[in-house]
Length: 486
Picture (tube, rainbow, N blue to C red):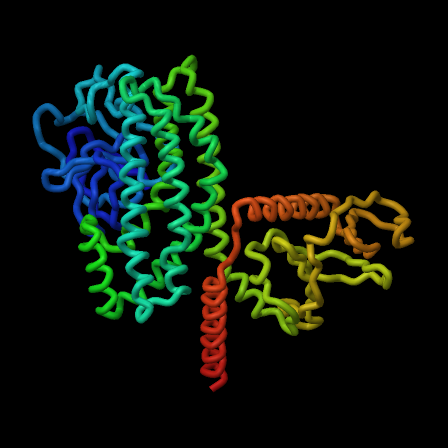
């Protein structure tokens, strides 16, 4: 959504989620709080005020609900306007509006200027460096509070928590804490206290880039953590226990789910901070190429984490698809796979039988599932087997006589077992379809390799939740069918 806010307007926003601060200049709030927006020139982070407190806060955590124009002679009939974005979108100022430059409206126009005056590049770079260092130090404190203030106390109460519950609620937070302490130690070594703008922190991100992948497991688990906490909080004992933990550790007045959100916020904030740092780093600066490389690395990390989070949100659909296939045999799809990559009909010949069969194929990560359509009800599928993609290589087949199968082929490709002479040949109806399948197989192998690199997998808890969803949907469909028959 893009809002056009006239120059001189007062904009209020309502907090949708709690925001736990990780730096002195951030504004803490709880869901439902009303924030006065003072500067919205950056689409991701806005400057706002609650009572007498001012600070930065993520724009995605609020929704604008009130705009009150200031009716003063200076701003009457002015065309000065500021675009405020609450989603990514390449919105441009309308014709006749003034431009926003580095947080300011064009000073040549008679309009309201937001934020502080422009400073020289070295000072701005020093400000960003100081902000990053301050944020990291505060973040370490939050992680310590979670591990020592909550997790350690929970482990003492075996009458209230079992190991599985703690794994779901806290995930790998201790691994993240250990990693961040090492990362911050290296940042401190590179921090120039006398001249912060000369600091070279880009290499730190590059040296620790593989370590940031541990956030993937935590982010993927976060929704389950919230669900588990929500169930526990129905019991007043847990509400009192977590509040006692907070007070004992002398933590700020934010609920435990707000603290557990901080690693998710943090990993998403790195690209924003590095982009800001790069903006104020001259190309001749010794840190420039390292910051540019670090920005690319952290953008890739957050992109991959978001992609895997999306995949986990779709596992219910995969479980429901499997439940709809008749005569299913063997392991569940979710035991090994988390994404449907491609599907389509192909003619299939399997050595040594050599007889062509028409099947519907579903390519998931790690496996290719074969199904047969019902002769009358074409929307009904019967399970006919699967191929373990980890054990096969994909090879292109040239149009013409195939020596392995002694048949004439067109638009074909093969799956060849790495450990035996077992072969499968597949024939598409059109060359375009063959190309799409070959691309899909390439994507499947790439996905598997990336998952192995970051340790991505579906937890047993997530599998159980998906199974429960399938049973619930199946039960609802059965009841609806019985009502219809009656």
